[in-house]
Length: 550
Image (cartoon, rainbow, N blue to C red):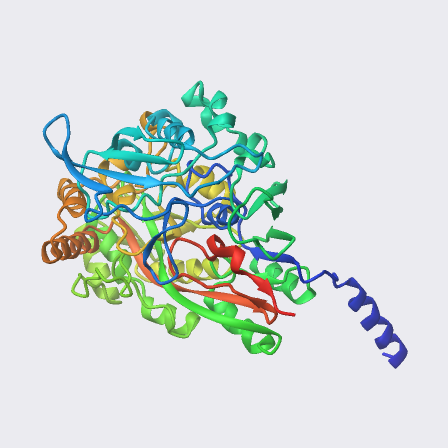
């Protein structure tokens, strides 16, 4: 190619790269939210974006300490803002008092008051509303209001984490009350989805000013925010579900920063760093991200625990994490990370053992092998459907490796993936997956698995599809352990319950533990102030500390 042509091509490519001011930040993530209502449904993409546009009352910070973010201070037994009491039915309860930060406003200049607290509780405790964390709202028996800022929750349990109301999502009563007249229809009528750019929905440093469904969200400073002023005049969050396209956008300059919370998988980030490490700053943050495959326990094949155990014995998880993730993502033997203070190292472990897997399948009645696939006495083929998020290259690669390993022990695994919005919005939430559903849970430190393991949290028509026990797991012993974990606060006894919970989980295997993820944050060298947390509360909750270095 002539030199003049090379130069011309270079000029054309250079001109194609967007030129933006440093106060305009574009973030790339791998999924688009399935809705924007903070109380309905659980999806990391939504949490990431809403962290900039609203705030929880309490939160775990980057040091994994519980702190106030919308309140003035945490309730305290010593200070009298937390008091033991007896409920109407004679059980031990507790009253906790919070004061909202003064002079807080919704983006349409409406004050945030205890009226919003009362309305949010009304929505949350109604089973028909479809709120995800229904248990938190149900535990509140009544609320005393002192003034526009101070309120007291009366709770029906004296839980060990009584100070935390992280999951209590404030909703604007002046906008949403009319949409809640029919609770069963609230999910479909909420202004968070019908009028997402309404400034009255938001009270963080930023507010959402534009939404292009499935593509991107634009946030601009909220003029009613009374906290530390944000530095960027505009933040655009682009959802690019194919990870190869995500890196291409970063290299072209269409994206400034790939969020670690939901950007590239570790293997892709490591490879990308080898090729482009000098252009960006890379941070690998280990944390409480649990990659696993939920099991539909209503499936008669998978209802047999021996089959579930065989599935784990048939996986070489050590090789998967060593070869694909450079050993940086430890194999999970349960749902609790070794980084968590309540981790039990002595849970049952299922090493890679194809012979043991075959023996377990034989015990379960899968005795005849035809064409390399096991069949039972009825001639039924051992076939399992396996789903995950389409377009996530790393997840799909691991899925294919698992499929190949399972075929070696005679299991026919059929892959059927879906775009994240459909997968999380309908298939997982409404338990429509037939076999296995691979995804990740991102939790807080010492997070009691009430919504994911308690039998009362199985989503269904009767509870508006609230709860996150997508496997349909039901164990009286697990229910009792989880109930006790909330109220038995003496350290040794509480730790014993945590250990028993993990022991039972790893024995029953309602899900297949795979590994604990390390998140890869890929920054432009000029972006400062972003602090990865390693838990479910994303770095965006402190977006006002982000800035561009001059």
